[in-house]
Amino acid sequence: MRILHTMLRVGNLERSINFYSQVLGMMVLRREDYPDGKFTLAFVGYGKESETAVLELTHNWDTSSYDLGKGFGHVAIEVDDAYQACAAVKNAGGKVVREAGPMMHGSTVIAFIEDPDGYKIEFIQKGTSGAA
Image (cartoon, rainbow, N blue to C red; front, side):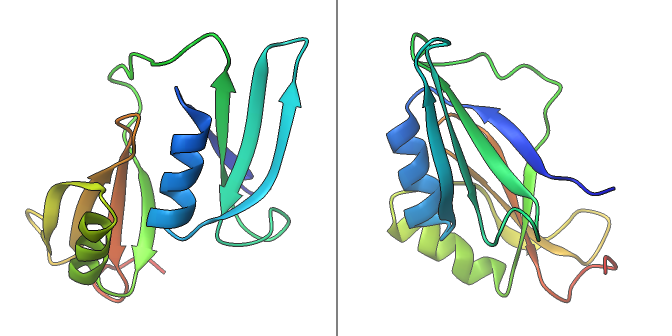
């Protein structure tokens, strides 16, 4: 078994695709409209779906925003340098909500950014955590 994808509902698909591809450097892997259901699915990621977990961006055509609730936490992305990654996000017009630095009660270097819909994305600096 393996994780295939995480689905995020987005209010504006083009804005979200632009964020994940232009700001975070992901590739649009596939996209399909479902006119009968009035929704579009776009899959984005850093590699082939057959090899790595990806994000499924779901856009319901009649919904422009969502209440994110309190259950979802964040998506984590490993980066070579969290400080540089935050600077790149800011330069691209993105929002950093927690600057890069060691996590509280530990030495792992992390940062948090937000996508256009308010979903949190954690940057974890490579080589600073105990994760494999």
